[in-house]
Image 1 (cartoon, helix red, strand yellow):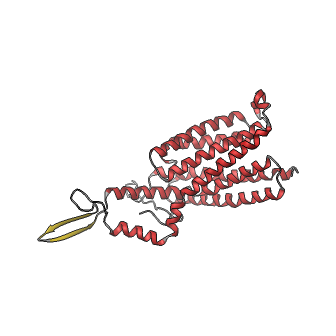
Image 2 (cartoon, helix red, strand yellow):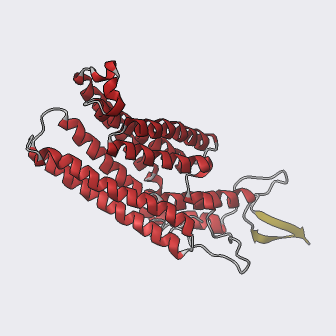
Image 3 (cartoon, rainbow, N blue to C red):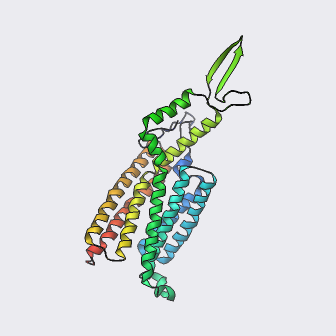
Length: 321
């Protein structure tokens, strides 16, 4: 059954003497972007290139990462929807919205003022700055939708964790109650019985293959959700940063900027701690490759949190507010 304490330790990894994964071990796909496979890893690399171009204000690097990231993430979203992969669909849709919002957000900073070779393109160099505000509003809304999409995906897990009666009911139904469906022989698919001497002997409840497959998928989904829970806090922090930059297009008070910086740290630090916790859990299970990939994400979260706070407070430092 799905672990009800998925936030604490969703699944344990057990290996037999031969080194093969046992039935209790989640499949490796839970540790990466799932159905998209190598495309998910490539999308993560594209996001990193995109961020490097943004930090350095280098349009050529930025555009390579932005275009590749959007296309690869669109494929990941399509693949997860095509395979009906539950939580992962919400996660991939959230990531797609996030990268679209970030590309338009960063693009506005590349254009006003024009950076790099963009300054040599006449229609970009002379672009009316009044369009900056609508673009930033669009970016803020899209990143906000990304937050909502990912947060709503966790609602079923929160209900399971917060409702002990529901968890006990699920366990009892799976352990003791036969399936209500009937086979061609008129009996449920979970029970086996014979009639001998006028007496019916029930040989007990035998889980159907459908239930076993369903439980395995639920375990994988809970494991995937627990490993990526830190992203909920990070995307909220990223939305606060985007919202702050949107406000900075017009007039904004010093108090508002300081408050936003505090909120960014309030969400960024828990994201960092939860990410480190997931990395440690992978290391304890000797999943070193997965821990390395997740660890790189956690370092990226730490860098973005610091960058966000510095960017929000920059107007105070230079005295423009």
